[in-house]
Image (cartoon, rainbow, N blue to C red; front, top):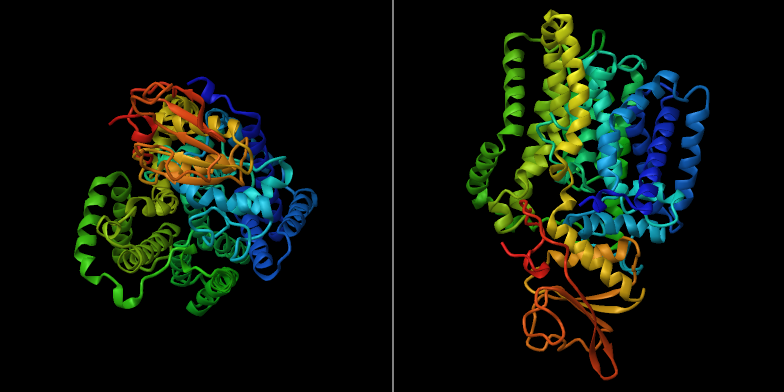
Length: 614
């Protein structure tokens, strides 16, 4: 266990490279805002600018993406040193407080490893493709080894920028950037709590700690297996919250920053388009500022949406023009096959999920009801809390309407009737909810806090710091999903295989009882983590035949992930590696897996092929 918490040199280099990429994005954001954006807002703005430039370049030109990536890096460095855009001393103090308070979390996460099937099915393979080839995948190009090579690439661009300063693919880049984004959201929430978002001076240490808690442990949609992994959920939820915040600010500069946030948002996931459109509708429906008319709000919303719309259209064109197979992205059924008859079942399952996940949906529904009651009793919607409530309502309704359409027009069979991942998708709204709740509750909360005795206020302030510092270690098994026994055994199996085989060999992975969950994890680990074997040819065998090597004449190696009893020379319940030689198959090595812990295991990887029961 202790050994698994010690980061490798490759992991430390990857985290440092992501820190470099984050500073580049901040520099870009400061540059385009001429020094007007807070560092956490500049991070999103710079990322959005980079996503726009890299996507348009990659779509239009058959020239390495490293060229614009280097140019963007140079521009980011310039933005950090140019007197009109560089960070102020107060900005560095704010970032320093976040960094120092987050050291325990970063220490726990430094050794975190990619761990979930979706990470290996498309998220990490797409990032590795950019790093290896400097181009988007397409028909006729090198195989991407991805289930969805045409999925959006905004998150994967982070690995491209980080990879400019690493000697090998930074396989922890997606995890690290998701952590950075949530720390940035925590700083923004801290400023909102202190009502200090109009100035660079950082909130106090305790308020910063409280903001970080609001973004993580106190966030009702925070789920470590999503938000502390390489999944897209944290990036979506942070950018959506920042976009909502920028809508509430009515100055001219915020309109352009809003446009960059929409550009970052629209191509993180395919369903991000629904969130982007919901946010644009919410911006257009905002009550006019004094002296403005409705038309001005609509114009600003439309103008801000143009860069994101161009980005979305460019990538859509590329996918349809450059891929022969439509299944390279999530696709829709023909309209005549839409499953309208399943809507009652879907609604029933959604009601069940809402009741089961009341920790998220309870505050969400309460905030929406509170807004609607307030809007009915005290029109017009001229306070910031009312306008925040309007944004949350419009985005929630638009996004969940899009989910319903997806269930009947995209998903099929059991995934539709289960309302597939309804909770996970709605965690995208969680930080926007937190921004809204801060605006709604900070007045009463401040009044209550100021009524407390000075020693009580000091105790509460210290408590926020202590809780944020202690939580990562206290809840390490909850925070580090990758430490579960099935995950550890998968990494152990991949390490033994990678150490034995050559870079271009052909290997049969005999995984009895797998069902397709362990294979993509092993493939991803072999192709994308040190020592990388990106060119392996892998054969997936999920059944152990009486003759295990039947039909494997083309393979040079065979791995049985869980040996049966009676196999000559190999104890039952171990992993075994065989080499294909001139006289047949020869046992090369066999080994025991790390001992199983007694904790609860998430069933994202089949247990049987890893010699686990349950």
